[in-house]
Image (cartoon, rainbow, N blue to C red):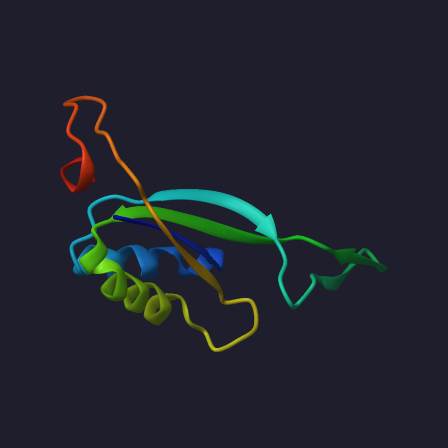
Length: 112
């Protein structure tokens, strides 16, 4: 199993959710986060004063999947989240040793 974590722009969340749903992904966890990458924030003007926004709003999506779905999931996320502009986000993939469904006690891929 794999744990996929994707950091994307907030307005792309619905597109990514739909793309994942179309390929059969049943559950995701979404968290509102803030951060910066290469763009290192930006400068904004508010009531005539200029200030620096160091951390930009992002959305973090986490999902546990079977190994064989990894490429499909990555393609779905990249296709749906891509705007072609800086700050589109990142996808991290790590091995997931075990998963347990609390209600039934199922383990492994069955728990996902």
